[in-house]
Length: 153
Image (cartoon, rainbow, N blue to C red):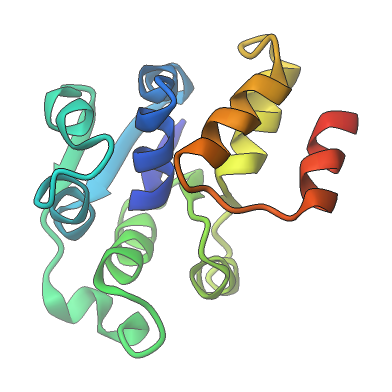
């Protein structure tokens, strides 16, 4: 499976010690803007992403992402442009505007919580509550209703 990721999922999966599990899902590519966003400011996950030799960093020309640049940040715009360019199976995005833009181009989108749910159903996560609590401890916001729903499904 060919996958492109934006920064938030990489940051949060790194923060909770689950980044390497992504390698099991397929070939992961990220645009250079996402790589720089995650690694330049010593964010959570910075070292993990730098050392993940299974993540392919791809240079995207500015003109390739210009169609998205007015509504999205550089990382999101380049991630969508890369997904289109590589004809990927899936893009990992949390931002609603980015998700809508990707979906408008027919790209399947999943976010952090959706991917955690897939992992849980595949048996890769034993205790969803612990994972959700760790995410929140590292700054991931979700409503109490969504938290409850994640534990029920």
